[in-house]
Image (cartoon, rainbow, N blue to C red; front, side):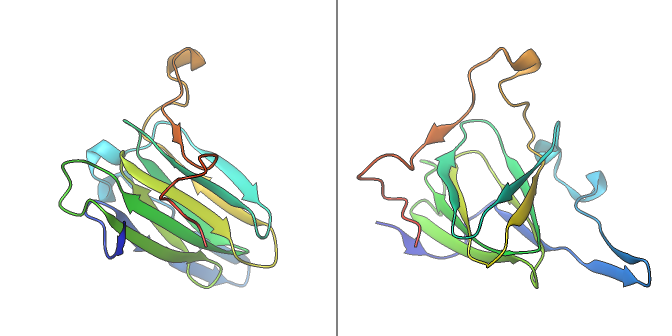
Length: 157
């Protein structure tokens, strides 16, 4: 059903690591480098254990700004399910994390998942452009979950 390729509107950037005798620093994002529609309104950090996947799921309105920094390696899966997209039906797979730190912006309507394919717990930073559950956490969560559907076309290897 899906063909491999590059999905329109997904933004992937390498995150340079600036190292000196004190340690290192990574600039995750800058407002002057982000399209206005993807500017974050909140952020969080999660840790995923080795071999564990999160997703696949999608958002109707929310875009995610993920940063995969390490110390583990992740395989990130993206599927374009947007009805009006020129790349509808495309699957894109990206390796990110230790050795390949990346910022990935996932627009609304792109089904996405990631799996920790490394040997240690891995940290993921996310700065979405919408508040989780809306202002005061009083709105429905903008999330369509696919991982528990037995016939899902969104398969993680």
